[in-house]
Length: 147
Length: 147
Length: 147
Length: 147
Image 1 (cartoon, each protein chain N blue to C red):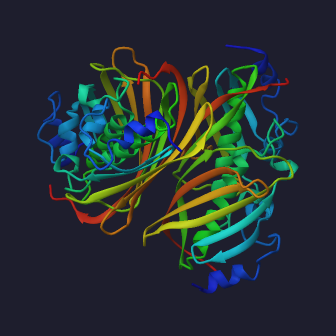
Image 2 (cartoon, rainbow over the protein chains, first blue to last red; image 1 turned 135 degrees about the horizontal axis):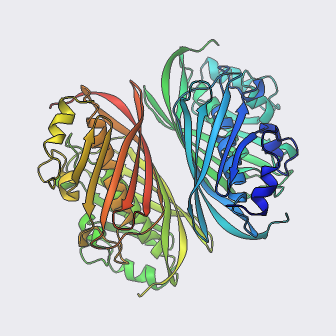
Image 3 (cartoon, chains in turn purple, cyan, brown, green; image 1 turned 90 degrees about the vertical axis):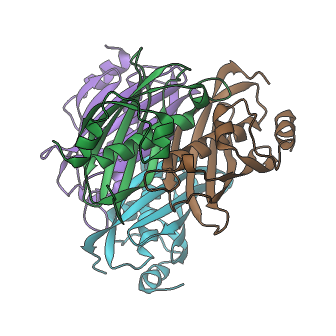
């Protein structure tokens, strides 16, 4: 299913994101490989500044990727008002390394008028191992979306 | 209570962290204002690159701050092996703005030999409002800590 | 601070609950020892039917106690509409035994018009050890409360 | 894949569980419809004592069903030692009613030697709507399993 928000994001398919209104998206540099209403697949390359003291992909960056992509996935619902994250819950299953490509699948699990539930899974693209999965609930705010 | 790890971190009190072995810590630039075994208080200033599409403090950065400070707080236990994060759960209560100073209180709630439970609360320093609170469980790995 | 809902619950202080409109409350048999707006302390005795295959207090019953007491604590806000639980997150820190008395402290952490955040901590009354802590978010529904 | 624990549970397929070593299982009365290593499907009928003050399926009972079935699913791994739940995180998506049959799908998501990650989804059997989904992490203890 398509709408204005989906169409905007689809023009970015296959390109590294560097010009998002979200400064954090620009830092994470996702490449969208699929954009539908309520469903996005994106890739991220683990850079040195995303690592922890052990030189591995930092758990906080995993959380950041999940939360940011959830925001973009909720954007594909093409609603008139911003949604605000109520909570975020993540399980960490396998580690990631510098240079790894991380594949993120993000989907709307429940699309309520007031509350939206989203799930996101992160895989190692090369090994297909599940790195982490997360769920989040968002609530509609009274702040209108500009674009 | 003091130990080598606490003493190392205490030398950094009051200074912006820019030389941590964690690249993510260096990006977040915490200023530690209290360091004890199992307890750290740190401050962070919300920079433009930490904001979302609405220009507010990004939820993923909140998660990143919490996860990173939890890692540092677990470091104060002065253990011989790295600990790995099992899960992270965050509730978002109030928004943050560009330029806000965020006060983070992080504490070990349960210090098991195998599993450690940590909680972290983020406040707006000026208004004292609770921005977010999170909990995490970590497990001892077989990877020795270098320093 | 007092209101009708608080007053109703305060008449039950010190008595085992067996006549709640919540069938689950009646099964759990809490004894309220403190009831204020947004804050309840209650006690529960671990019965045989609350145990798991290892003969210990069942994690699902801990979840049930936390969720049920959160509902009662939200009731003390004396709102006109039912609130519905969005999510529940629990960390298990120590086990409980048959016959143990469990002390539950439940508090409203954030009282928004639309979203309410609640935290609950369960202690072993005799040893004061923290058994579990949980957080939950609830959303206002359009279903009017009857009493 | 089969093992002793799976074989024991498979003898119970299609029957209401009333003789489990877990007292809580006996109270919840699951009917297993599929039992494999790391994967169980079970059905539960919502009884009056499982309802909340609004007469709906109580969120605490949903948590209890999820946690209890996760324990049984971990049992199918046929390990020598009990596993202990570290945390439980649940999202509530749709309500359940008295008399509803709830279908629960529970799976091991990651089977580590020390830490096991489990997910469970609850559906309304008649409408196929997702009522709730949860994830949990468990850790191996040093308590030997008896059977």
